[in-house]
Amino acid sequence: MPSLPTSNPEQFHRPLAAAALAIALLVAACWPEHDPAGRLQPSEPHQKEWIQLFNGTDLDDWTIKFAGHPLGENVRNTFRVEEGLLKVRYDEWSSFDGEFGHIFYKEPFSHYVVAVEYRFVGEQVRGAGPDLGWAVRNNGIMLHAQPAETMTLHQGFPISIEVQLLGGFAEGERTTANLCTPGTHVVMDGELITAHCVNSSSKTFRGDQWVRAEARVLGDSLIQHIVEGDTVMIYTAPQMGGDGVNDPDPAVMQEGRLHAVGYIALQAETAPVDFRKVEVLNLKGCMDPEALNYKSYFVKADSSACRYADQ
Image (tube, rainbow, N blue to C red; front, side, top):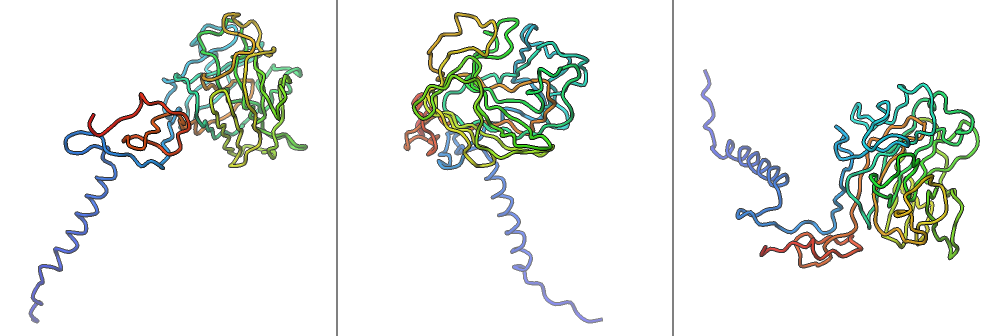
């Protein structure tokens, strides 16, 4: 029987040390940015911190408002979460009588990028009628929307700016990320735009494909619509005005008032649609490079948000 070779202890220690180092690095990467004393450590200033408005599980952070129904009533289970998706569905509807719906995120924003990844599925609600042909494969991201609780009972749309999301038909062109303006005007190329809807320069997206649409919102100054990375519309000075909103509260509808801050909402407009992502990149925050939570991409300073090592 041949003798076994003499063992070298380093042969065993090296793999164990490497494994221990890998585990330590993994733990460090997942650990909150605090030192042993519990103090905050600097964050990566260039790393974008997207806020997930839709958590993939429930709608606890959202408020629903349908025209003709009280605040909070999810009419016929239209908004729901299934398979990790935020869905708009009309399978429990037998007819439609102008009951447009919106679902509002709980927190307002002023300077931000909002992004959704959406797809249209299925057919328009039964009974919508020919007058609502425009609503086929139609949804929207409402920007700078009034608070849901300030909408009147029968008000169909919030005073807001709409990034109109449209699915293409079998033939012809149909752009998405258009602009619609319920109770709002904007300025394009120095001209006040009072038309209710203006088409973007996007391409047509047909079928049930996923599409990413974004809006970059800089308070009451600049707004950009972006589709799959391409800027398809730019305008400025969003302000209250015109029609497109039935029965608004006069105390809320103030002609000429600039939209500087507001809520983000999604629509239920007779078309079934899925959202797999709804996220915001806040562009307002601490702009002091000496602060621990400084971000290089912020465009609006909020000194009250700054956190320092000695705090």
